[in-house]
Amino acid sequence: MKTLLASLLATASFSLQADYLQKPEVESFIAEMVQQHEMDPAWLNQLFAQANYHQSIIDAISRPAEKTLQWSEYSDIFLTQRRVEEGREFFATHRQHFDDAQAETGVPADVILAILGVETFYGRITGNYPVLDALSTLAFDYPPRADFFRSELEHFLLLVQDKPVDPLALTGSYAGAMGMAQFISSSYRHYTVDADADGFADLWGSPRDAIFSIANYLQQHGWRAGEPVFFQVQVPQSLPQSAISAGLQPDQSPQQLIALGVTGLPDSIGDSRVTLMQMQADTGTEFWVGMHNFYVITRYNHSYLYGMAVASLATLY
Image 1: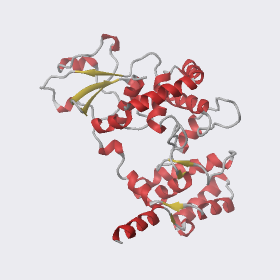
Image 2: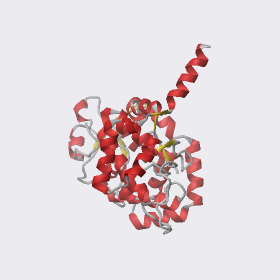
Image 3: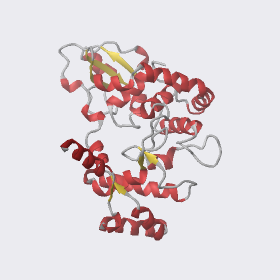
């Protein structure tokens, strides 16, 4: 009986009618949308009257995999033979789209493919949360990042008000990321590409649009065509912990690392700034150097683990 009761309570807490229209902050938000963007207040009230709160969204954003897992655990999720094989099949089916996107942007097809693989298993797992629910839950019931998600909610409303889509039908991740490419609303508005020229950049149903949008995102964030992404290196036991980069942006010169006894850096990287990363793998501690293009990949998701998963998967196809 206790097990059944717990199950029912868990199910009930998954999605609750939050009565968002009764929240003063929602009322203020609607007023801002009307004043700043001349949105229809009746339309906004109708939307928020149907928005639901999801406790599972709060639970998920409070413990993201990128902050709770070691590289050994994270890589076991994304660097699987099945993901590699399905990626090869997806590439074979849509090769022309990948070739065209690479030719136009300089972003390698295997990197675009790897992002699709990590994000949505090549469009197969795109999330089943209504985007309006996800953004409302996080904008009005998750204080740590309320400002960010209110901004995303604003972008979402601007996105759907002039597009041939039903805002209540659009689904995505617990954080409101949408479609095969998992773009948040601001990224959708700024970086999507209507590559099939049908009048709508469709990240749900158009592989060509998704492929070109990812390539455009990376290009706009500074992808350098022809440059490497990362290298594994060896370090001496005497390497000070302070040598490990504190952030994602490349902040060290190869000469600095060589002076500390780091080996394995190819001569081809010249004087490019790099990021020295320490990863806990199944076989022990590994050290990797991330280049500028590795940093660009992490603009998609600000995590060493994410960058390593994408860069590593791209080498396996």
